[in-house]
Image 1 (tube, rainbow, N blue to C red):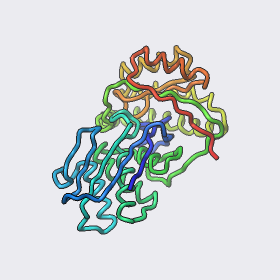
Image 2: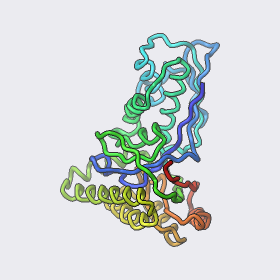
Image 3: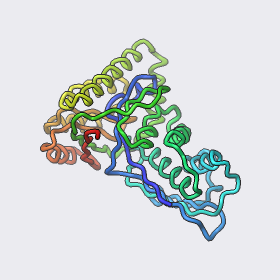
Image 4: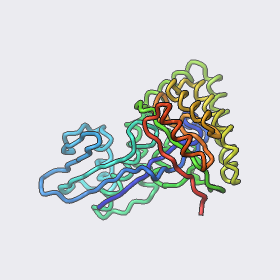
Length: 310
C-alpha cells in the first residue's frame, strides 16, 4: 500500500503560535513524501529511506527515533502486538530541516500507508494526534502547525489547543519559496525563543501579540480576496521575527533580494536560522523574482500558487 503527504509553508505566525497566538499555513503540493508498505519475505520490519541513508530493521532503531515512534504508535493505536514482516520504503522530495514540514509529511504518509496495509481505517483526527506526538521528538515543544496542515492538506488557521479551522482563499496568489541551504532544526530556535521569553516575558509577549494581530489581519485579507495587501504584513512579520533572533544574515539577504526584484513582500518562514523564506509576488513577476533569489544564493526555489477555495 502507498500513501503520500504534501509539504507545508507557514505564511504568518511562526514561533508566536507556540505561545497561543494564531498562525496561517498552507500545503505545498509541489513537494511530497511517499511511503510504500509491502509484505516481506524476511523476518522483521525493514525500513528503507535512501534520502537519509537509513536502511535498518525496526528493532535496531532507538524507541525515540521518529520513524520507529510512528510505527510503534500506529501498532499501539490499532492494538497490534505481533506485527507481520514488512518492507517500508520512504521517499521524499521535501528538503530536510528547511521549514517545509519534511518530518511531519513522512510521519503522515508512514502512518497512513501502514494503516492501509493492515486494513485499519484512521480518521484525520487520529492521524493528526499521532503525528503530533511524533513531532514532539523532532521539535521538543512544537506548535502543531506542521502535522495539522499536512494531515488535512488544506490552508489552516491554527491556534494551539483550539479546534482546527480551515479557511477559504478568496483569490489565488503566488508565493516564491527560496531555501538558504542551511539546515534549520526547529527545536533549537524554539528553545532559544523560550529563553528570551523567560528573560523578559513582558517584552516578548508584546512581540507575540503583534505577530498574532498580523495573522488575524492576514486571514481577513486572504478570505476577502485581497492578497496584494499581504505584502506589508509579511514585511512587518519578518521584522518581528528578527527581534526574536530567529532570522539570520542569509535569510535577511534573500528577503532583501526578493523585495529589490519586485516582490510585494517577503519574510522568513518556519523555525528560522536557516531553512526558507517566502516572497509574495505578482504572477507575472514570479520568474524574475525566482531568478533574482537564485542569483542571490538561494539553494532551491519553489513557485507555488495558493488556489481559491472551492
